[in-house]
Structures are given as structure tokens and as C-alpha cells.
Image 1 (cartoon, rainbow, N blue to C red):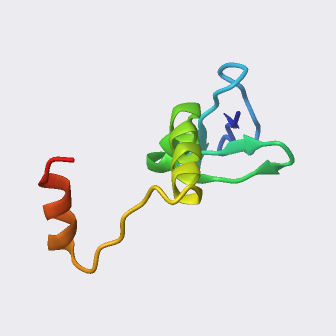
Image 2 (image 1 turned 45 degrees about the vertical axis):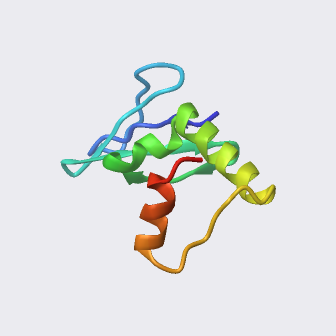
Length: 87
């Protein structure tokens, strides 16, 4: 499960809790997911991607793709028609 790290303008790191941090570097706010052996910065607006809830959705999507539970469409109109049709 990822956690976040905070880096201040001065370059120090502080924790707001055991699993969540916020980074502010030169007045810009970032989230830095911390995975085992990795730390990387992403814009704060994209931090949702690294939440446990979103990662569960990603895992389910990967499983659906691997199991062939997907549909492909040749046009956006075909996709909209399929979404609007009863199952």
C-alpha cells in the first residue's frame, strides 16, 4: 500500500501521519507515492491514483482485461450505443 512523503522548500521531510504526507517544493504542491524501494513525485491533482481505493480499481481492471472481459469499438458512437443498450 503506497504512502506519501513531504519535502519542504528547504528540502526537509516531515510526516503528517504514518501513511500520508504532502510535499511543497518552491510553492508547488506534489504528492510522492512511496512504494517498496521507490519514491516518485506526481502533481497533487494526480495523487488520487495512488490511493488504496484507486489501486483496487486498477487491479480489478487488469484482471478484467486478462480474463477477456472487455469490448472494443471502432467508433465512439458504437461505444455509446453499447453503453445505452440493455444488457
